[in-house]
Length: 303
Length: 255
Image 1 (cartoon, each protein chain N blue to C red):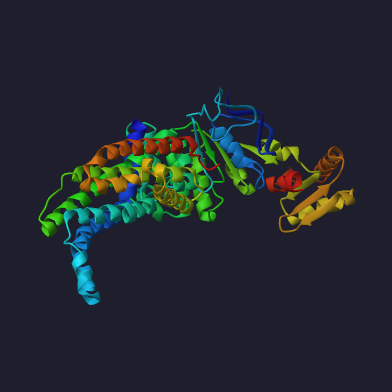
Image 2: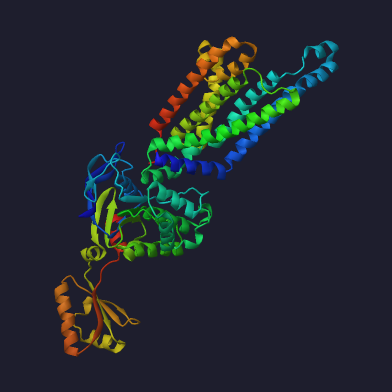
């Protein structure tokens, strides 16, 4: 069963269509990166999933149950992009407040475990108003996971953080892998490659790309092959022996690698392996070059 | 109800930690001390001023009584006290809505009516405690200056003023629920309350909450106003309830 399922969802503000016939599924316990330019509809999608607003059409299912603003799911928690807190409370008081609202038992133990998990054990009695942005993001995640939700929505969790703060948050997401389904939005593409099992790219409220990171990359495989040789001499010998000189487009002497390009990839690959066999040259790697997610994003969205 | 109690604890903690309790308490206690003093020294002040203007002016000011002290107290609390309450509580709901804290509460299953009720209740509790303390200080100080504890209708007069303060809290929270910002909320509240005071000039103004203040003083000189005071207390409570229901109806989180 899918943790999150959207079927032909549409959302309009006045006459502007923000979400346009959007459909996707996210399986349980996976981490999904939600990518799009500012205004692409990421935050609106989160609000729809959380039941903060209603769609104008389509269906949203959370763990098989249809949801709306009148029927919000208790299994889902949502952390906004710049979370705000009751700054006069300490980390302990805030988490206790959240635990009480969720009617949890064994509160002290849960608070200790959660603060330990998010790396804020030492700040237990510190007022949230004195927290750094990174710490606030982590206490936000702590307050959302303490009740043990099955789905966690994070709206641009690292957008306001420095590299250290970003690392802390992604390390934390890594720790949560397998414990819950996580959907996080970002416009920093490297973030998605770090932790995501699945990636969804939307633009103007429409889905452009959906799949695992490797599936998405494979969709956009180029017609470029990179061969890494063990040493410089092998690379030079190969270069001399390879007849189709026009296919060789680049050489990297530091890496002892050569790049080849051809419209007929099968013929190119056969030709390369034939020379390698004939010349008894050993290689360290053979790769069909896949673009980075950033390159794909630029190709498909920014254009 | 469980949610309400949790939110109430949180809201009370907020009022204490953000020093709102201390601010309102200070203002009310100062008013409680200042009102009898002002009433007490006012005739002397006018008389000394009159002496400078001529003997006939000095004779016009009678000695201060405890009723003059009540007049000062009601007028100070209903103006400066009311203003302090509006300033302190005007942003309480709108700030949570704007910052997205209300969304966090909704995300944790909090119902809108409990969110509003806990704000109101916490403010009622704080204002009640402070008001009772201020009244006690006022009565004590009156005894020192006028050698009198209470007059016949003191309790009724204090109750009328208290009901007016509860009304102020309800109006403040209503505008905090519907406004886009704290400043707008405070301005709208003050305009509404002062606007109602201006309507006193018209016949129907006698049915509005502000008329309570006038009645709470008139009963000292004419007990025929008591019935009218009771009627206005009931009307004020009804109008306050309408403001509370409207707060729940129109309160929206930031989208």
